[in-house]
Amino acid sequence: MIGSGIDIIYPAENKKLAEQIEENGAVVSEFFMGTKPDPGNFPRRNRIVSGMALGTLIVETGENGGAMITASTTLDQNRELFCIPGNITEKFSAGTNRLIRDGHAKLVQSVDDILEELKSSLRPILKSPQPAPVTLTVFEQKILDLLVSNPSHIDDIAERSGLSIPDTLVNLLSLEFKGLVRQLAGKMFLRL
Image (cartoon, rainbow, N blue to C red; front, side):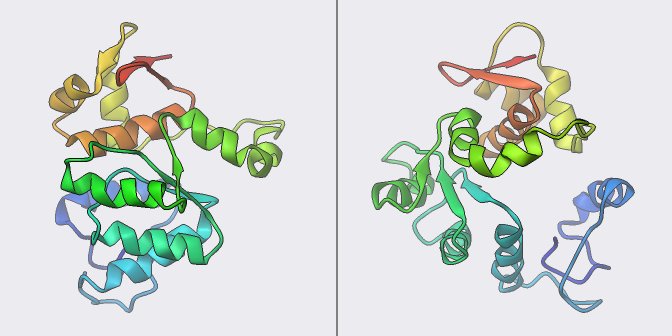
């Protein structure tokens, strides 16, 4: 789901990723062809994304960040909202910490917290006789290739991947959902 016309991939460096998604799925937009990725398009896009999901995970956001709009939409749609807590002195943790504090979001420390909360909704999917093949995004594959049998710290993984720590964490959580990575104490991650 993109926040522009289907013919305009934003940011431009995601063009190859969009092509890979097209090979295994679909790139979708509710906007007319030629629609530029204006800031107001992204909350509109996110309402559809949150509506299609059982829950939304917010890794970090300021109190007035765009993710707070998505959080509100998620709650309005009666979906589960999950947040990763952050340092109380960091401005990009203020939004997630407030959502947790006010009881709007469930605190998440590992993928197990999300799976536990959604287990009744996931039960029909998890009991399917044929497991779906695991497909990875370019970023997930990049991070998985960096992991070895010894645990690695999130900071080291982010540095070696060239991704920001929040982006690395999101991809690691996705890999954990897919059963390829396990999080250990102290933000250490292990390839399974």
